[in-house]
Image (cartoon, rainbow, N blue to C red):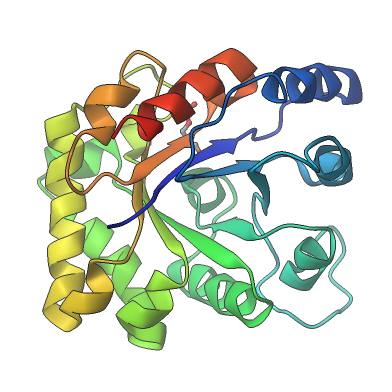
Length: 252
Ligand SMILES: O=C[C@H](O)COP(=O)(O)O
């Protein structure tokens, strides 16, 4: 039986003060047992989060990382080794905002996935199609290609050391959530694709959904057989909402 993961991606939001009050709110929540919890704050706040969440089940993640594990002259980058050293256990790779706004390629995503694994981090591989691609019936091809680049290098076993996050780009930050059925269709397709290569490992891979997950749609999404939790953006900036989403995962 797979555990569910509820992950918060704070993106480029927060000040020291707002983070302090968000962390205080998170520490007042009742967290469900048997659910993995993680937040990805801006790197500047990782230390602050680590200290405040010392006694919390919430684990930490980087929002991205450099494509190499070794130190180097890469101004502005953060290596996966540095994230690990700072107390992170996860790192997002290939978030659609990195792909579309910063031009990250599949090859760079593969390198980041590799570098994260080499440093003992669990990479969260983000995949998903745009509205235009969905309307053109290309969802399976796009998501399949984004997965394949990692599968070619590491197989299903390598992917199982991380997490897959299906995030339809058209549902991110738009309030337009994929219906549970739409999301399940893609999650099921991903699982089937992995199962063709290695059924045993495929059943172990956590596939989480991201795209306007809220307290009031989380139950329906998490009830789907191949939706193993959520990658939550906007709603993770409110401690009560994030807590409610985590408790929805606890009810599965
Ligand atoms: O990483 C999180 C996703 O981009 C979803 O963001 P959202 O919940 O604000 O739509």
